[in-house]
Length: 152
Picture 1: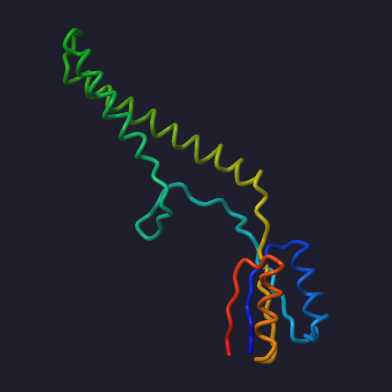
Picture 2: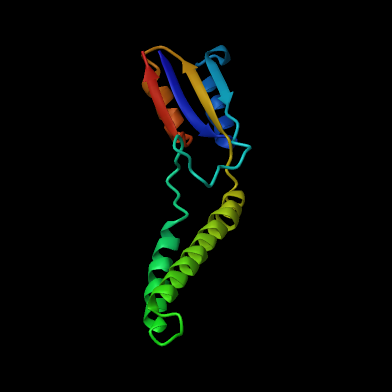
């Protein structure tokens, strides 16, 4: 039987490997595969083939609507009239909302990801007998595995 699990690259990984060795799993039956983190930043603009769920126009649409109503209301007293001032308000509100979202996702969220310190993960593959499967899985969960899977 093979048991797969994922861990953050931390001291818990070393502890689980030594604990498995103490419980009779030979080191030839333990295989660790480190994963690498994404080096390239994600694209903020979606294409037809790739979308990540982040919308840069939602705040712009809301602010554009609000500013167009305000512009049209004030436009009754201004020289160009309510239609032009409503369109000017919609354009400026949309642009302001777009720039707010762009600043938020480009600067603030990027700094948050860096401060969070995302560590690479490691896939741990253990080959053992069916009888030791529950013990191995208990050891993995005890040492904070992110997830496990069994293949018989």
